[in-house]
Image 1 (cartoon, helix red, strand yellow):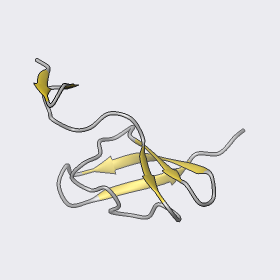
Image 2 (cartoon, one colour; image 1 turned 30 degrees about the vertical axis):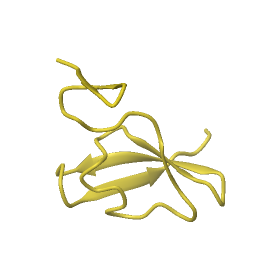
Image 3 (tube, helix red, strand yellow; image 1 turned 60 degrees about the vertical axis):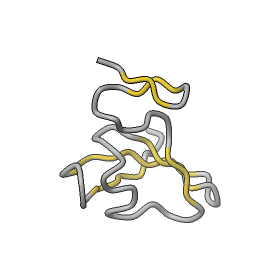
Amino acid sequence: MPIISGGTVIDGDGLPRGAFTKAGAVVTNDFAGRCRVGSMAINTTGGTIYMCTATNGTTTSVWALVTQA
């Protein structure tokens, strides 16, 4: 069940939606505890996009560079 917090609807797990941003390459454990598998992150310096491919939900996250086929 969604939760309303500060005027924003947050899904029941409380994790943010939308992409994370960072100046520089996204590396292992960036945004750990705040991301979920499938979360997106944007390198605002290089203009590249990453997808979270694994997380334990608290301390680890693994990111893969999204490339065009």
